[in-house]
Image (cartoon, rainbow over all chains, first blue to last red; front, side):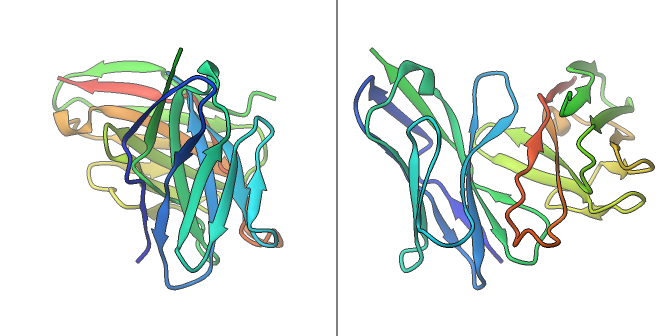
Length: 113
Length: 117
């Protein structure tokens, strides 16, 4: 069985500060990793994904995540957050042959002035 | 291109009532999914479908039924609603895995907020 752990349910941060949202997974087979973002009262949108190749993946709005196989982690980082980044962030894992994702419980990022 | 749409957006039911949530996608995706989202629990998969006429159980299927009679539609039914089914329901769709090395993105609808009294 696979599981996804997001240890931080809430992360408060000041605008322009750096942030890291943690994600760890467990799986005995190869995985594909995703970060989704959910803005208030909306559905989820894909932020970035790791499939293969370079372990560092980036989004168009400045987020990045690094796949660390030895630590089974896929932490999300941004060097300088903006008020508009306030949202809930979900890490998700997919096994190579599966047709479904397993989601973490989410981390609410609250950016304030 | 509307993407994934869900009907209705909000609904209030009394215990024991039935209802159907409709999900429609116009991206010709093979796979479709129904999730529920509850505070502190993330998204949990209820049922999913890998093609027209097929359905499969997810993590939390009890109390729900689904049908995929047309490729673009995926219906979620509650035969006898219970307060424990108060939640926000999300539908999602994606292409199949064939030839894409498992990297298909799931596209989500805006959600249906259901309250069962």
